[in-house]
Length: 230
Figure (cartoon, rainbow, N blue to C red):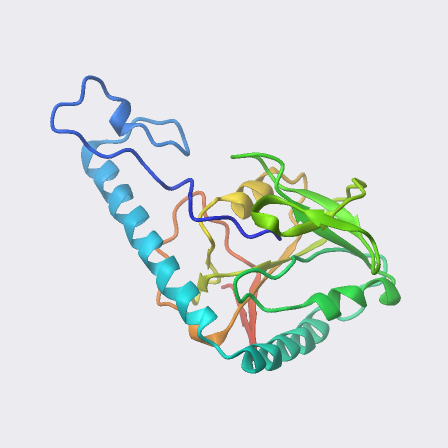
């Protein structure tokens, strides 16, 4: 899927010494008024996640290009093993961004295997992603953050979603880029697809401190294998 930028939904207004109303305590995700202690906890979490994203993205970009290429090939092999026959399935993948695993060759072959590849498209702020059908050779155009998206606007709902991670924990919670697009999209789908996060071993962290709005992946796939939720 298109990776979200660093202007994240978790950003919350700063606490002022003498706020004129209770708006500084409103959670922008739920719209609920938070107790002061909970608000400060959310603010601390937001700051921690932002710093952790920056650290992990720098770590990912520091991986030599050839090493990332080898890891991507291993991840593709592991996906084949985990997914098996994908004939007749709609598979949501993504265009790689800022050192994410490059699965373009793998997704180009989905049509040869009888599957339909769909790529995510950012529709607007705080809105679920749309998934547009893409086949090898189809025209692309720059989308948000100049990530290529299909020109043709045929949409389909994925049976399988393959989502890049900035970081991940042992419970298969995903730390993303902060836009909230993945969680919002998965929550909005009428039926839950099979969700696989993909990333590199070195992006593992003890916990992302999951919140009620965070949705765990069914599994995380890295160059060394697969971790399943639960």
